[in-house]
Image 1 (cartoon, helix red, strand yellow):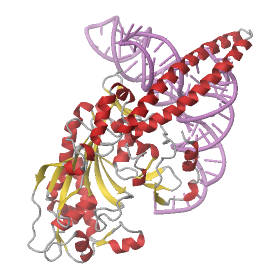
Image 2: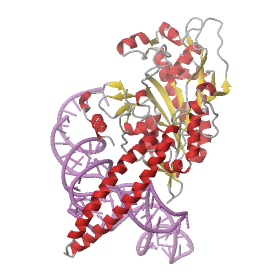
Image 3: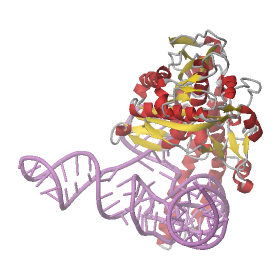
Image 4: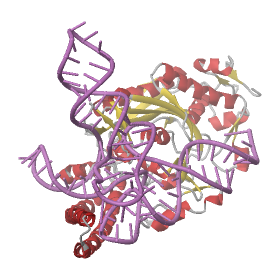
Length: 466
RNA sequence: GGAGAGGUGACAGAGUGGCCGAAUGUGGCGGUCUCGAAAACCGUUGGGCGUGUAAGCGUCCCGUGGGUUCAAAUCCCACCCUCUCCGCCA
């Protein structure tokens, strides 16, 4: 543990709710773990299969360098444990004798003297153990998930491969405009005033634009809850450090989130965080599984490190709406569940009539937490390419381990980790942008996709002033 | 924000330094009884880590983290959470 850092986080709670991207990650000391032991890969598994782990990490292209240090620390830890537990056994035994002697009003002074030394030794060992444990936990939390064996090998995102395509790139017999021009012309999008009120990468939606956003959210939630079997959740948009660690944002990616100043709280970058952590430190019963949740939330991203990229429009902003799909499933079903989840996200695009493709993500581009991932991408005329609008991942037991989410197969059976999955279903802001662009008309108006019209009071077309 | 109360096993609820990983009750599981069920009775009923082929053994866990002590659920410190009353507020 790192008391100085802990103090810094906890004190000064009167500083109010000023948002600042967390710029300094915890390089200085050990990452502070608040609840239980969290780990990403099973330490025993690593110990027993170091080469398999090394291979997996090499395929992902990160984390392999932690391994040797980790294995050495693990050996040290177990050495200390054997020694200190022997001493503790002795202390417990002698303390028992002392208790008996005292009860019989006999003298126990010499035993007490003797244990004073043993106790000091235990204290020393325990302290070293704490240090070693802290380092081990820190390393474990920084080692990424291993790719599933079915994932295609690659070294950059160029190696991702398109696995299916739906619809065709929209063709126009006029010069199409990007959504930020169309939206501003129609006065349903306002970036300029958002810059004044907040800053860059924020936006106002107005009139039919705001309603369209709301229609999309409702349409998505309704479809997932009524046709795909998800239970709706409305989560907190702020989470604590333990939750952000549970899903894998921390400790490595703190700078991607907005942190509330002076508090142990973060604005969620996705509903995945609160919804997955719903069951943190719980043992679910067999009848509970599988659990399907869908959740609307705003998502906040600091976009640190992407200065200058996609600076216009709704594609890369600090705050956007998203409907998320989250699953907790039996390990043996998680890859089937990933296919289904991806299809559930695609269903939205199909019903909206938006052309898209799905790419399978290669080993190098999986990110920190995923074992396998598909990215549905929507056709964006202004970019003249497909743009990521969802990301569907199977984390296997990676998050479940960190968040300590388990289930019991049978009464009395050992708890096992569930598998977790999630995917956007979909990113609402990008979806709105895609609709504006793909449904634009020569006169600058936008046709409302049919499935949204019931949510728009029957409105068929967005025109200036609507 | 102010004042007070409290956090113990699936739940309820005892326990104020040693015989407490924890009484008792409920629930769960197994059994006896029964044609079957209920009732009654008997037994059983947490998790992590280490070690071991295994049975087992050891250790840790009573909100969290430290501390005092030969010995902590019990004493001390800090933090988190819940409840009640007051204030404020969408």
